[in-house]
Image 1 (cartoon, rainbow, N blue to C red):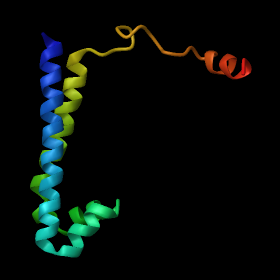
Image 2 (cartoon, rainbow, N blue to C red; image 1 turned 90 degrees about the vertical axis):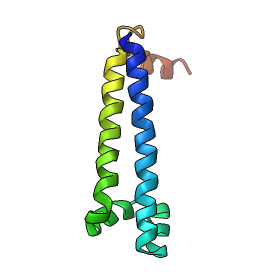
Image 3 (tube, one colour; image 1 turned 120 degrees about the vertical axis):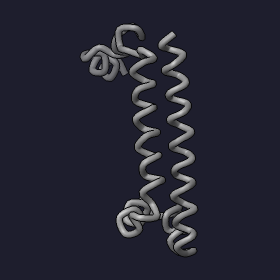
Length: 102
């Protein structure tokens, strides 16, 4: 049952992340066309926009953080642990032996 709840939380968190990112983008375009385009195409600009225009961006940032919290809680609740998946895919020495066999 917790796996289903975890999956729902992950999906809700992902939707919040997508929605808050679109909200931030809309706010950037409301400030100006160049801000909006810069937020889309220049990776550091969203952070700069958030700092410079905190009053406009704080709602979107709050929902963004909430989305990450929900996703993290969902991953924890769904119980995807290393033991359940069968341990590590490669043992520590497996990479070296794989490379040596080539």
